[in-house]
Image (cartoon, rainbow, N blue to C red; front, top):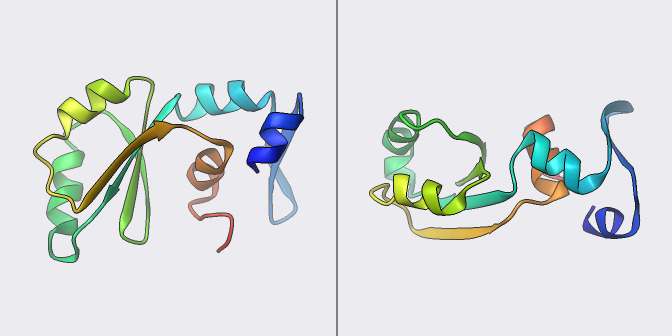
Length: 111
């Protein structure tokens, strides 16, 4: 997916034979999920409490297994908002086409 976003001027996201979205890769990502992602690896015993806590904030997120993907245009603001959320691992990075696919389909590329 990342090679396509680097090499192509336009891409189409297709899931189960249906075109979900098409356009310029960077614009698709920025317009639909934001430019940054914060990944939070959750502890099993606290997942429900953490999800309730995150619902207080106005951030879009997707859950895949024990990881939450929070989407934002301002990762620093997002990090300050969730500083008290109990987690085992936290990663702040640029948003990608794979993140957009996860958001659109609710599943990763390899599922």
